[in-house]
Image (cartoon, rainbow, N blue to C red):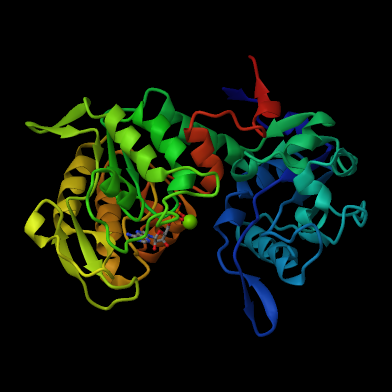
Length: 418
Ligand code: ADP
Ligand code: MG
């Protein structure tokens, strides 16, 4: 897939509407809202820089923030984001005032660079209402999508607007796509996928698709419990999506689906030194306690049956030392790694080891490494390792959909055949 990338030539003297992802965490300090993490803002600087240098007549940035349900909500206003963006531009010698437009009909023609209020304050955004898409398109001469993370959505600012304006991909979206494409198309081998976290419903189709491409899949975190249960291990009170019935809203049984995935890959193995390893690996041992807040825990070796007599209240909250050692060896040999989802409840120091140690091993490896997932990013930031990977994807669910092998609706209008 090749994208029509934004260029200086295309934007000269044009009014440009740029869809960005400024869905950032805000925090209230002394009665005013402030941006708590500006990495998504920083990610858009290359595109803004290009547009400023190209002498675009007007740059209109737009984004959603949170879930305002189609009506204004003060704590979901993008106003503090405009202020923060102004500070970042100044820091990067791109001195330019960032104006703020409370609605699409309140844009001053004098504004060179501005941020529109939260798109989702209008119910037309999520409904992909053509009237709202038309209104947005009327503001500009060309449209740029620099929000890969929203490109799996059929929303007015992603899909609708592209029907009315010449459409281009922003620089950050292109970088995101290239990094993810590198995983799917001839990755350097061994290619290792490490998945954890809680939400198997979000991740299973990506794991399925990646299992056809990767050499090894390392499973940890809460989702490992689905795999353990599929293999008839007792998981006690552990997190299991939609336990006890194991059925989610759509009536999908994720233990059965994990079982199917294990079965499909049972015949496949990769060599670790002289040892053949199954393609899909799940924990050999886990840390057990009665709650995610516990201050102490014990190690349960899952391969030793006599240890399997735990109290009802037991939960598996991190991968154990043997699993960390095995997964570390696999990661050290990898040439390509994709990681999504923490290996344990890293928010509690008692259960941070799996995530922390494997993050460290990966950060020291020369492999091409791509990380994604909101909590995975929080984890590596917490361990001060954010800058030590090849690519950190902000695209969350959109990245997972792309890695499931699906075409994202928002990318379609940006593609070119030549
Ligand atoms: P990401 O945002 O990186 O995609 P998820 O949202 O799927 O990850 O899951 C992150 C959460 O999973 C973390 O808050 C972490 O505490 C939790 N988690 C990890 N391992 C376990 C476990 N064994 N049991 C319960 N929760 C877990
Ligand atoms: Mg998450």
